[in-house]
Image (cartoon, rainbow, N blue to C red):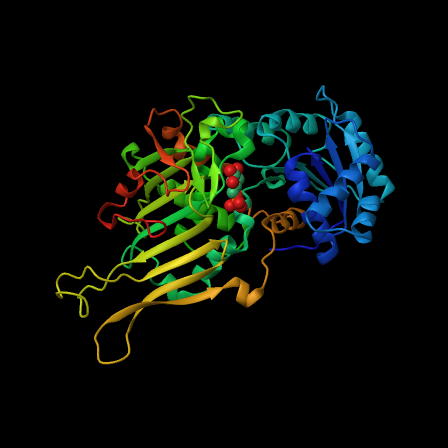
Amino acid sequence: MSRPIERHVFVVLGATGDLATRKLLPALYHLATSHGLDTVVLGAGTRDLGDQEFRRRSREALAAAGYEGEEAAAWCAHRLHYAPLPADGDYRSFAARLGEVEAQHSLPGNRVLYLALPPQAFPAAISGLGAAGLSHSPGWARLVVEKPFGSDLATARDLNHLAHRHFAEDQVYRIDHYLGKETVQNLLVFRFANPLFEASWNRDRIARVEITVAEDAGVGTRGRYYDGAGAVRDMLQSHLTQVLTLIAMEAPVSMAADAVRAEKVKVLHGVRPLDPAEVVLGQYQAGPVNGEALPAYRDLEGVAPDSATPTFVAATLHIDNWRWQGVPFHLRTGKALPRRLTEVTVVFRPAPVCLYHGRPDQCVGHSDVLRLNLQPDEGFRLEIEVKEPGVTSRLRTVPLSFAYADAFGEVPDAYETLLLDVVEGDQTLFVRADEVEESWSLYQPLLGAALPVHPYAAGSWGPAAACALLGEARRWSVGG
Ligand code: BG6
């Protein structure tokens, strides 16, 4: 539920980092120019910069995002400030500088405190902000924490305790940028605004669900971070699990943040403990992806030469509740796959008696398939059977489809949606404390386990063993 946007200062800790320059500043600028977002940015970081140098860098960042010219330069000149963060963790001088910026712009003391920092810097930053009294302000104070929130159940719990020592839960916004994607938000609209589909959304009609997040890019220059994380922490625990909850949740009593998040948590409660036999891990070897030679994961800078970190994971999850009992959810994500694609595939049960394919009692033919394409060609496609014209009884599968690009043109960047929600005080698209702990506990058994990590060639669809998870279906609906 959106509320009026109040004037505020948007503090970015880690303001010269990759996330801030590539995503946050362009998103704030675009919101300012297209939605009238009245924001003043106070960048903060360990670098000893002045306002002028920060503005110069920010102009470059905006130009790289396609925003050049006088309007962008004026926005930087009038709206951006910078304050170095003391290395000793004592943020009192920083708090004083924040007060000066607010006074200069006559702001009422509403503050977004955005941690665009490496995860290991979260605890010190939260403590520093809290100890300097920044969790309380004349207006509101909202803490935004990027993913990954913890690296396992214990660290996520510790981080929640620390955050709650200084901030109330309704002040904490845990980011999972997938929730800001239009197509991910649309999953709930698709389900709950279209009773036609909702009536079939259960074990009686659905045979299995596949969630694929495929990336053609490799790990690139992020080896140092990634080798300590891997596909389970980096993608499965967060993005894929978020999509799973939206696909599987019950209808909330309203679209209020806690009503929606409570239903998502219930899904996680219902997931049966993972069976390691239903998990396949892989790591990419050298190979061509889209005509470009990609080096093996182990040859990347920052990666141990004998690393066993998975860059691919496929897992089958079972939700033990009335709606989903017996319906497998196959989740799969990997780097260096043949193409970038995020898709939810819902495979419906075949007709009980087969009037068109083979013998009536051996109905192995067609199943209707619904493909919810979350990116990059956003839209959906329902694959159904029609009769081929002419003197024939042959059937053909045809799509009923919808493409965002045709209907709406460009879809907004996920960060714009999320930043706007933070300043409006809407937590619906942010992960709640119990939710993040519940999703870590789901994957905890995999984190320390010595599971085999199958090599796969870059440019392939991952280890062949991943197909075995599908049982009789044998092939993934995307990529085989
Ligand atoms: C990030 C992961 O959270 O999501 C990256 O850390 C991954 O490894 C990225 O590449 C994928 O996001 P998107 O929006 O490109 O699908």
